[in-house]
Image 1 (tube, one colour):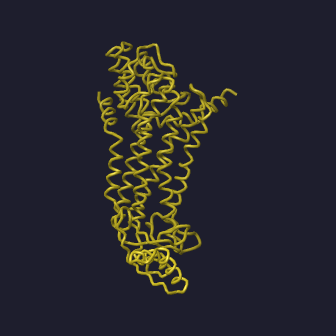
Image 2 (cartoon, rainbow, N blue to C red):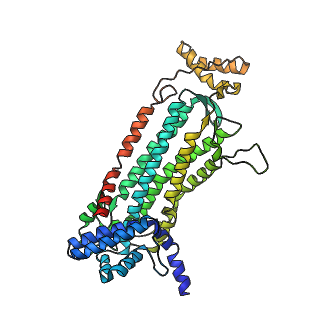
Image 3 (cartoon, helix red, strand yellow):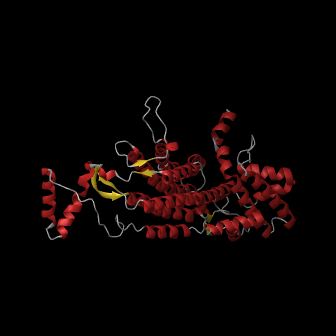
Length: 435
């Protein structure tokens, strides 16, 4: 049973560790630099170790890093590669750390890099939505409640609503990033080290905002960090899934509000008239799957006491691939929004006349009739077939058809993007790799 037990316990860990390879190397560069500063490495030893670690980083950055058969994880593979090149010097890099704080560090470095990519893709989609909102700000469409025509809306409002939703989602992402961007290195197996480690130094070398100060909490943070990030990803996914549903519905012949790009739809094998919105349907499904991620992570770690447990290994399998899946959805959605065509004459159809009933009630109330009397009069006119809509709308308050507040929404998103301070991390990593 030995082989079967090993297969069961390793699981997909070697596959998942490929996501972490270059971040494991970055962490080792910071750790060995710190070891030299406290006298556990000689200066010439550090020089050759850093040179070889940069070579390994380049291999990983090109996607060519391989965990060899029989090697348990990424940490062991990096150390093996160093030892092959440098002999016993390569064995010194593990002083003062455990695979527990190594994987914690790798996960945090990987996650903050992925969050930067997600934030940038969200911002790209946001810009497409704002552009279309401004472009179609004067094109009216029906607004719905209970899936019944309700009141006048506009494509300016529709596109802009999803833009502002993404601006709020960015706050969740920023909070997740800030909780992620704290250094666990030096917590070792969760109880620190008798070596005089300089944790402030590794924190600065890797561009973290601060460290996880308490070494027990640093280990308790595994699973918690993934769960918090998962909630942020789920918030974005929820916005996109809702947008995809709207667009699929509005693209159908019964609505015909929009026309999706031809290359994002497919035909039927037997019905020549069909153009199925496959890309947005898959986007909706993928985003709904991502919305289940927080619960998956939570159920894997919610009944574990403090300290490390092998259960946490399984979180990688659902967590690490989620970023690329959301990234793909963001890119597809931005492409479709850029290419989408809007029907500018929807309200020519008389079946939408009744959405202007509230406008008529308000017009009568403005001219002095009590609101309840105006409401009753318009209702009776509709029942009698005497209602004639006035399709001109004059909404002026903030956030309405005539006053979208897009400039304010853009300013909000800009403020949220600037709050990440990605430049600090990029500068620290570039300096570490250069030195």
